[in-house]
Image 1 (tube, helix red, strand yellow):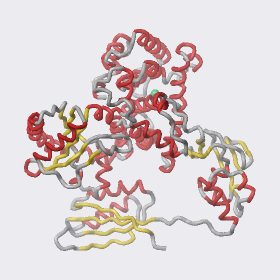
Image 2 (image 1 turned 30 degrees about the horizontal axis):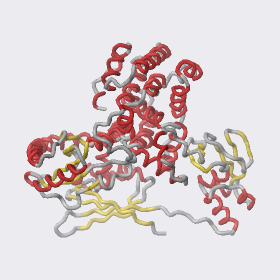
Image 3 (image 1 turned 180 degrees about the horizontal axis):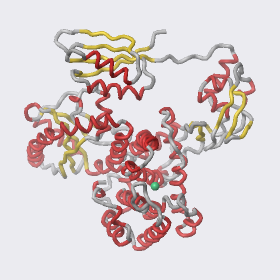
Length: 586
Ligand code: MN
């Protein structure tokens, strides 16, 4: 995406300027016929959006232009570029039938997909996030629609500052963090995921974002100074071994992923060794391991920090060798070694694949042929979770998403998404929400209409269960429920036993401190700000270590814990924080 950073969509409102950029970003990969298709879409969308403005005051058409440019950078095909230009026309006064008549079935299908996905809103229930992601895929029906939604969201996040309603800004940012960034990650699109997360981070956790930005900026110059000294030493050593490093570049860690890592490692900055890492890109896999050897011959590796993501890729397909070594003056430094193809796939994920197949001339031999691409692995994992058999490889040819067809996605009155097997009934839905709702179900409204409790549900239905006190499940329900959850709960109650309850958890934080007057008060103040009562707090003085403050409390939601830890870490004198989950005493 780096080739996009200097573009200002406002300046591209006329075709000639847009066309020049299109050719440049795409590396002149579209044919004359494709360009004239894109031009017709350009003219049509420009006309539909002519009078409209963005919240920022910019002409509305700047938005479809920005979306289509991102799509171009991700090597999407010409119909998808046209669909990107047209993606908001159906919403904003145009008709789908008109798009279909002018641009054909495929483009109309893509535009319709984006419009449908736009109608799905996430209301922030964490348990619903995974279902929500699946629902997006099910509704989109085509991976290209998902990518269009991702780049649409990217531009909307870049311009979110202009949105006038604070609560909507927050909802959109939360949805970006929980749903869209996560989907980009699943598709292996690392760069896009990082951008979406950092844009959302500033709205969802503004204090934490500001703090991280400050802390990281404070730390980066010294690290980069250090890497400047390291780099020529490595370049020479690699050249001596005849390993051509295609480029060696440093990068700054994204703020949000750095913050998440800090939370995982007791807020201890010593663990963020990859804040600035050196990336070594070499021609072949053999070169990767050879370069690792060269690095370890130059500097001693840190035990436990050598990671072979080439032999064992991450679940989203990420491949690289990582190692941390003690460089000059014992300064710990992370190196990431990969081939150019891995590098491209780590950044561009699913779309890196299109680059290869559609230009028809892969630059690095045929190694990629027959390889199971990250996104295919991901889709297959989902497919398996849904209990389908493996399919043959012609599945690779298709961008169609059809393995959700045995599931339905329905909504609670609050808009949470619940996924259920096909032909599931309101009783299945009720038990999915809560055993009490199931046990007391007396009636149901589907899309505001009363229906019987055995009514088969369809995707998109909004379901409201009507409960009555002292109601009990009927043995007749066993004949029509589809989920084992509902069946076992009904049997349980019919046998006369009380359903099992889940116990709340209690958390303990172990805070290592440089003790000072007022420190304990500052720490309890941080908890008070979150309206959390501390159950017990004690100070332990250990020989040859920092004194430790142990704080026990019950917290209402797990998402809050990260905020609390950040608050505490900000307090002067706090050295590190460790977390222990404790089972609650009855
Ligand atoms: Mn849009």
